Image (cartoon, rainbow, N blue to C red; front, side, top):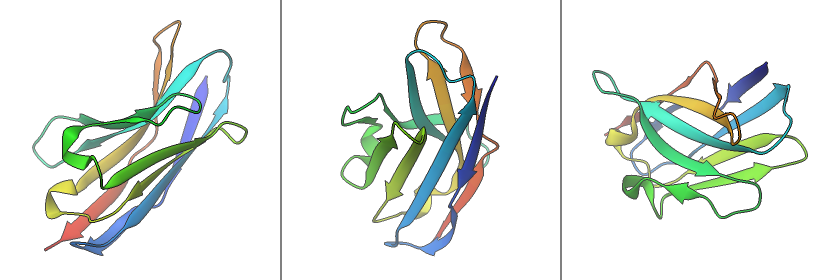
Length: 117
């Protein structure tokens, strides 16, 4: 089993910044990708960004140029630096770890991000 513990999030005004972190523990063997999803009220969960090892990361178009994902492979921790936040970025942000061979997905408990206008 894999456990994901998130930190960060909170309330910020539009234009502000927040940093999310997620540390994985447990049965972390083999190749895996880590990333972030978010779910706004009344909407489906959507993919935000993901990263594999030392790659630069991939992003949904709506956050490109504003969000930066990074990973510490030694600490098994992924960070999401969010700048120039907009009210539409509001939602619960979930950390995700996907094992690349088995395609098993693991999820964090979610952390609330609220951007006020």
